Structures are given as C-alpha cells and as structure tokens.
Amino acid sequence: MSPWPAWFRPGDPDAHLRLGRCGEAAARRELERQGMKVLCANYRHGRGEIDLIVRDGEVLAFVEVKSRSSESWVRPAQAVGQAKQRMISDTALAYLAELGRPQVAFRFDVVEVLFDGAQVREVRHIADAFPLARGRMYR
Figure 1 (cartoon, rainbow, N blue to C red):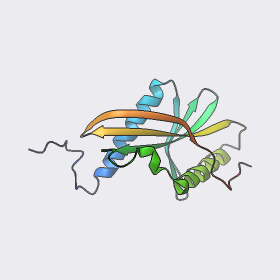
Figure 2 (cartoon, rainbow, N blue to C red):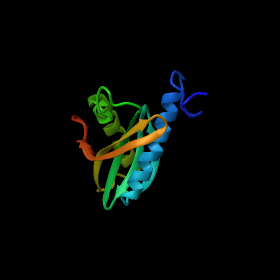
Figure 3 (tube, helix red, strand yellow):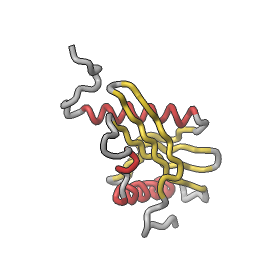
Figure 4 (cartoon, rainbow, N blue to C red):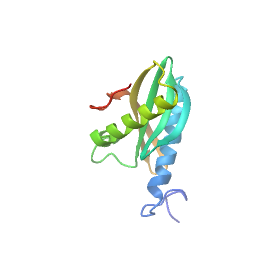
C-alpha cells in the first residue's frame, strides 16, 4: 500500500498539476480567512494566467500561488522570477483593461504553500511581493 494519497503519486506526470490545484485551494482559504474577497480564479489572457485575483479592502491583488512538496532548495516564492513577473504584470493589465481601466490601487502578491506528503504544512502570504514589471505601463 502506497503512503501517498490517490491524488498525489510521485512519478505521476499529472502529480504537479494536482499539487498546484490543492495549493491554490489552500491559498484561497487562507486569503479568505484574512478577510479578502476572491474575485476570480485562474484568469487567462493570451499566454498568461493569474492564479487568484482578490480584493483586500480597496486594493486589488493579483496573486501567484507557488506550491512545493519540499523546500530543500529554495522557498517557493523565489521561483517567481523576472519573466514570470512580466507575464503576471501583462496579464493583470489586460484584466484591468477589460474592467475599463478603473483607477484602483493594485499590487502583486505571492502565496507559498508547502506540503508534507499530502498535508498542507505551511501557507505563507507575501503581500506586495514584487512591483509592476519594468517597461509596462497602466494606461
């Protein structure tokens, strides 16, 4: 009998997708626990995607969720490099354009979800994790 639950089997090519979905669900619960309102999940535009779009009071937060089953090398948030930040920035600007370019404050957050086997070990919300990527303008 495997010690791993049916939804997560090491070596399974779809395991990372299931881990990501479980991480996004844990992130959503944590943000809602903090009083934020989830407006959209898995927003896609072109080749970009934003995991969660939430309202934190009067601020709109575009949230990238990073899930890991081990932190042996680096913290999950460190995987959000410049290319990923540009993609998230571009996608966020497309979302704002769809809303008619409202004059709202917005920020970019990261939520780290660490698993110990199938159990969530830690959820860490990093508000204002990075700025709007250079070269991009909200017009």
